[in-house]
Image (cartoon, rainbow, N blue to C red; front, side):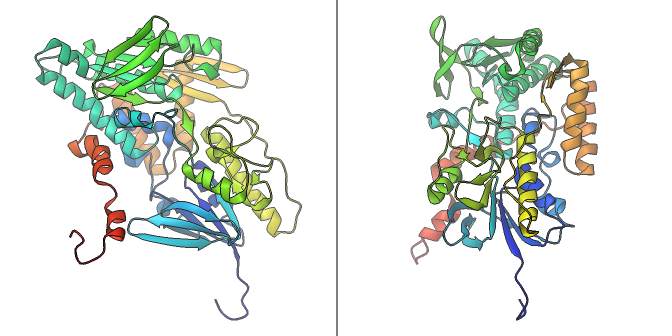
Length: 453
């Protein structure tokens, strides 16, 4: 910086999900320098992860590079890394990236680090029932789902074959319903005729939840319609059923009938979300409270109590019982950006964040979805068309929209799945990382002459 030149206001945005990305874009003409820090180099369109897991879309179509999205925005510096802590007094964030740690100073901080999968205190379940929060999760599930059919085709023991052809989805919210519906379509529509020793149509798809309805937040009418469509697809729905154990070969549940065991080699978890560990660290550093899910209790304008320079947006914040959906993140990210611009312009700030509910949608099968938008509740083909239009609208990038439409054409009008490639590494990488740890972390600790090469 040249002598006498005033330093521009520094905005650090943590997370390139919907909240962080839309906050950055809303500041494109502001007189600020933005540092956008994210643990991956891409923006993830999380609502379509289940389509990556079931072979409809590739990961690139729902995860465009952040640098490509923001390449024309000159006031943004994109950095790779996970923010591990916040020094509120010094106004800086501590960041860890593969092989390197660094700090970034801020004048205003916007934290939108998303949410993590919650296993309700049973984190060991994750070893055998991956969640649906990242590209790694989706690719692992793809490898497990398609690999299950391949291994079932090799077994001659009927019990072993049935175990490989039983798929259990935990959680009857939108993600769980969409996953169960797509696995059922895969088994009944896409894969028959491709195996010599098994009939994929004999696969069991079981959807489990402790609540008493599927898509409970959509209302009784749409919930009933969704349940009916799941039954037509052959999905076995077990409600008021609590998971009490998960291991490599099955899942233990408490049902109204008593405790039971379901033998299954392929389980997936779509029940419950929690704030990431960063939320707790930031709350502790700022001396503020969190709710039961670990989200930060914020002021009406999305700032932390006593810290008007720090905003928490999206899944990081607890405000007015707002749901953890993309629209909340988008709108709160834009609200934070607007507050920053008003503050720099010397205008009054502290306006309450007002959420405009644009509704909820979930696909059950091809050409069938449910949509709840205000007082409008539709299902079937009309709901599916609405789902299609909304998801195309929010997919980032023209190229991604075009390729997604092509793959939807192949999957929904034809009988193919464009993305069936699954590797051994995808299926077992989680176990390897857990067993051997982070090689970069090991390298930082073991740097002496006797360190492994």
